[in-house]
Length: 288
Image (cartoon, rainbow, N blue to C red):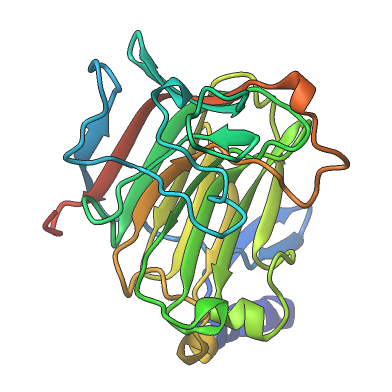
């Protein structure tokens, strides 16, 4: 073996042993290129739950309407039926001006949202949602996951949130995002470490998904990997990867009043996010 090949062999073995990464080699014109992007293996899955929104009303064994609380995302939530349209196997969640039809509600703008909280959760698996949405300045539709085990807010090591898809205002892009105590305590929340923008036409149908693995969150749009958030052993005690500790529920929500809006365009309401289906896959060896 030549000295050059011996060097490369030593380097590859060292990277593998020290970094725990799989090294990809490409040889062309006697040039060797090393790629250190780690591939994450998926378990064998089974379809655990499929929601096609083909009933005349929401399946209340899985879904509940989101309650109004004081957080930015839910402070305009309402259970008014006109915000929830089931039609031809699809669900639309609306953001509308309240001109008095929401009796007793002083909110000038109201939104719809549904959640599987206390009814259905995922620990490890793959969640896929086919959706499209309109774009209005001030609107903020989202497909996301969380749990209610943290009691101290974003600094609690138990805190875990996965934003599969968020769309803001008139953007021709969506974002994936992850939230945990490690990111907030180290002032890395909403940084390139945790957030990824993806160019899409939000008005067209796309499948937004996340795969929750033991060692990474893998995000996809239309089955193309768009972002990966890895588990880092040295920061696990800080709450860097709480996503496989507590089962998480799913939230589909139309939201109003994002801080990123240049102005709130109430004249362009109503706006909506529309869902075709939801599919959840779990490892074959995992119970529901």
